[in-house]
Length: 289
Image (cartoon, rainbow, N blue to C red; front, side, top):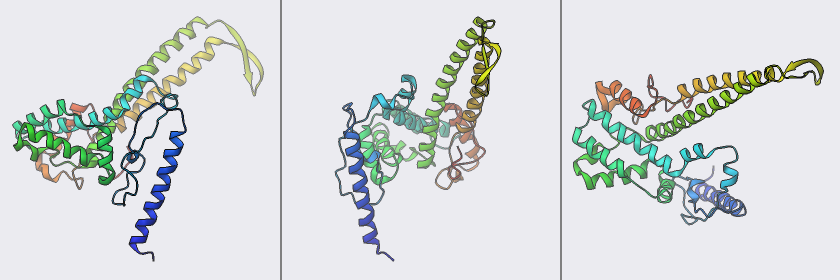
């Protein structure tokens, strides 16, 4: 059996090789000039760090946008991810105060802090390398900011919650916003197809069967098939999105034990504030959403 120190050196060595490969690969692509933390690729918790905390890595915005739109890309920036996490904390504090779990004054201080809170994404990514999650260094910074507003409120930041709650819920807030954009765009596509169905409802085109000529059909009829498929896919996407975009809230062990009898009410309140569904129970161990 390998000794632990050797295992750690072996793992760290492969991490260095992988990081160097990623750096070389990305730096050889067309450059957009953004500097990213290497920890965005290698969040190695507990391993020795043989490389500098930050590396210059160039993203390829043109290629990243190939299968997206400006509206969707704006929902998944570093700033958008952080904003979604902070919105969860603000909604949680307000809901807990509403249900009598934390003092109203603490919730007010947390909400005011969240409204103006800012953090450097690269600093956050660097600190997350050792924590294994963005949530831990983010909460550390948020608590420091709340300390300046109301020291007594610091104890109620992230109260009764856990890292997975904020991480999953923040991503689902972004997914919910993305679903709204996709549904809007699919609606526009359907409307455009409907116009073509009506315009070409009597325009004949050659039909096909097994790639061979068949009896004529109208081009409007062909477009109607596309419209029918878009309609079905839109409905299926909405159903999947409505099911998936459900609040994750369970606390450290998933039982919301620190909330006592108010657990149910505290779960419903932030879900409503964030526009998400209310779960029957904590689901962060299931990973099916």
